[in-house]
Amino acid sequence: HLQEDALHKAEQESKHVEPSKRGGRSRTPAQEQKKQPTQEKKLRRQKPEIICWKRERRWIPAVELPEELFGTPDLTVLQNTSPLTEDEFKEGCWQLRQATGQVVVRWNEDGVTRENEITLGEENYLLFKLSGQDQNQGRHVKSPSTGSYLVMVPDSWKRNETLSGTPPVAPEPVSFSGHQVHFFALDKDNDGKIAFRTVENEIITIESKAPRFK
Image (cartoon, rainbow, N blue to C red; front, side, top):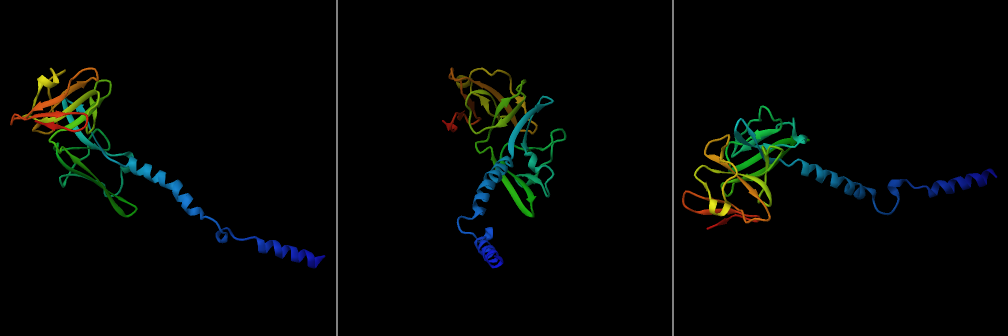
């Protein structure tokens, strides 16, 4: 009996194979597939955005960083290669110095330098959709749909009232010189548009897809 028991035990041990030596699909790709959405979601969260808010009768455009970047090593925010400074009162917001150019957010992650680039004002304006109870803050958008909007344009641009109607309020100043903001309320039931006339007498309309020049 002892010999039979020993033989049976040996057979059982020979059938037991370590998980790493078993055949079939590796578990690692499945684990990576589970991790990837989380990593992608994290990267999506780590995308700076351009916002604006009203303080002391002026509109301040700024780069808003996601919380994941707060306090990261070697964090710098540049506009046209010049460093920006963080706002005194709004954590994670770095005031812009102009309405055009390249914004670069750079930080160190696990010993690797990462960066995110935002191109501003390619058509010489910045469009924001307003929100908040007092409509005193906005988030940069590429094109309008319906709702309340603020457009940051050069001082020389004038509202085209023929296409846009009378303004709901008068233009207001921006935190840097050379630009001002105009306000528009767009409703799907009317034909109101966001339109300006430049000093060269060009008509610029900002529509739902892309600006058109005449």
